[in-house]
Image (cartoon, rainbow, N blue to C red; front, side, top):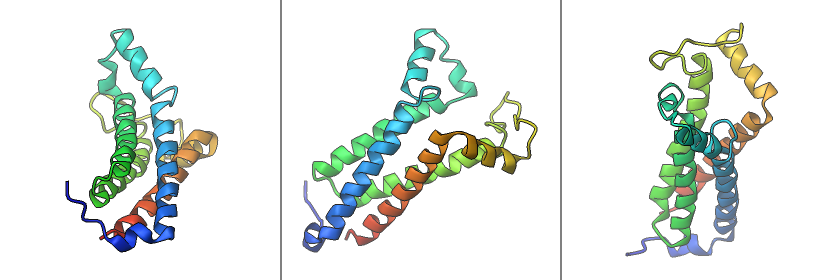
Length: 163
């Protein structure tokens, strides 16, 4: 494999430190999604073990959380192995945008009310109030959105600095 990284980017201490911050944020975001008790790996295992895989059609988040969490960890391993970073950063940017936009789409639509066969659920609130209420009352959601936003910023900076 030909490494096309700029020698300058290899020796800029600020970039190296920013990559470490990014890796830490990747592992935080991946951990939140992989080990979320209601929507991560534990829930996916429960659905598969009890032959309730069909429930993933109504709420695909357990499967998506696990796949995306594994992709995040895999991306950091590929960066560490010397794969070209720019495409990996672009993939991470796309995934962070998907996480952030997906969260708001899910909650603004009444918990996935856009999916076939799902009735919107707003808890008696307007869609915007429902989003604010969820972010206010679920610390993991707040931490997740904060970490995803910070990671998005770090990845954009690294992507722009990578030649």
